[in-house]
Amino acid sequence: MQSVLNDGKKRMAGAISALEKDFSKLRTGRATTALVDTIVVDYYGTPTPINQLSSVSVPDAKSITIQPWDRGAFGAVEKAIQTSDLGLNPVNDGKIIRISIPPLTEERRKELVKVAKKYTEECKIAIRNVRRDLNDSLKKLEKDKAISEDELKKGEADVQKLTDDFVKQSEGVLVAKEKEILEI
Image (cartoon, rainbow, N blue to C red):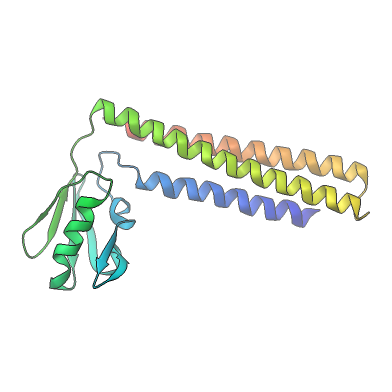
């Protein structure tokens, strides 16, 4: 029964880390390399993440610089940034690609908060799916006579407590991200 709970804890923690990864992609008006990490460049016919074919840095809070190692990749990197859904305009000077992060409008901030809430809801659904799987595993153990009915009830209560803790944790992550997005 303990192995079922440990497995559930690991999977629920995975849902939280996936949520944090999704949040790192949300633009908050502050430059971060995570903004461009997910952009994939068509590099000689091979889809390649930007950070695998260039050095990405943040010289200040409002800009990102990208320096491709291959001179031939400049155009492809620039095009990939323009076609991404980030709404950023790169400036290529032949040596380096600069992206300035414009300040967010109030309307855009509210949109980002809605997206953050959607990500959090998806995380909660993942956590609840893990809870369902764990409860099914416990019922199977009880059916196979590996645990008693009392142990099943205790196990289900432990699973519910675990679920509540992780749902609360996901809401805490959302509150922190909301504060960061709405901060001017």
